[in-house]
Image 1 (tube, rainbow, N blue to C red):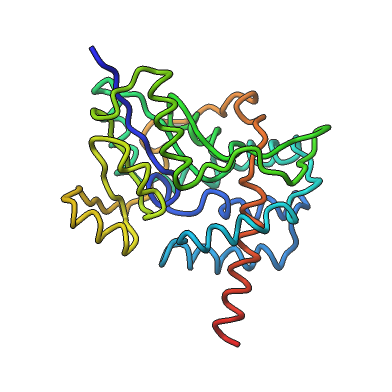
Image 2: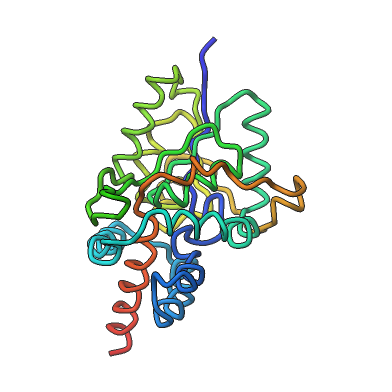
Length: 266
């Protein structure tokens, strides 16, 4: 009997915002970013919700990561994420996504979150959702600090490679697996499985899905998991200890969107 999994992108597929940008305010309160960056995060989230981020935009954000997070204390970042996780992320989870995750689990499939955001953000969210595995971006850490170097960037074709690698290790038949994403940058991941589905797709992904006859779903109802499942325990601290790029991505995203806005209005 073959095994199968359901692979989920995170932002705008499971949760209604960018998982990295959502932590702007607690990062400010923890002294990692300034007030201007917090204000920019509101604008960045609006842009993200309307248009998402294409390949060029994501690459530009990535280019700023090293300058933004070099020298940040990993333990401090971990503690901020742990303290703010349920207040910030829990209310953003789409009810439709939560139901879909439950349905796949009840049908015997593993649930895997595959995200470009960092492990220190994606790992705790995965634990909160009961995911079996999480694949996310990782940054290099030395002596407890981010060096600014990226160890593994989970984006584009890398996501598809991660799926194939995990399938080989866990015995998944990819022809029987499902994958869900909102972004055309995740086409390699969607093409790697037998059952791809577009969720809240951008224009390119919507066109491709319609051309290929893929299902297209619209998720619109963020709901607190507490309201569905009761009070949720905090994820184990060891899950929160991974070194990753999510914090740098948050600040890099704010900086890039700020410049984009200036160019548009200049």
